[in-house]
Amino acid sequence: MSMIRIAPEVHLVLDPDTALVAEERSDSIAYSMEPVFERLDKLEAISEDLVNSLSPSMPLLNTWPGRENTSYLAGIYGNSFYGIIVGLAFSGLLALIIYIYSLMGGVI
Image (cartoon, rainbow, N blue to C red; front, side):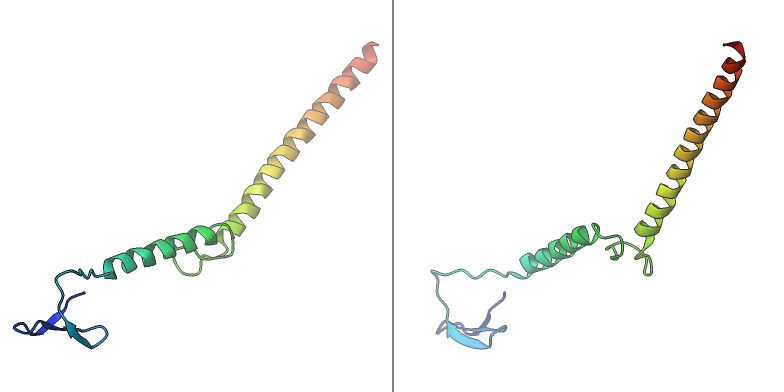
């Protein structure tokens, strides 16, 4: 935050944010909080994105527009694929066991 010196000989300054005219004091220091507020805004956007990442239908910070349900559809396709693979493996194993039992049935 910068102060505008109105009359340096009588130590008058103007605060441009509040339009307040005051006496300049040597025992107080004023700092600008704008860089801190900018970083807080960035952190708030990142934390919002982290919360949105838990929901498959919410948009993420660095994604293209219109990709809100991508995680949801990827979960459906992925789980369907693995379900089919496990089902086929189980069916193949069951068919193999039935075939082996049919071969052993003629021997016993």
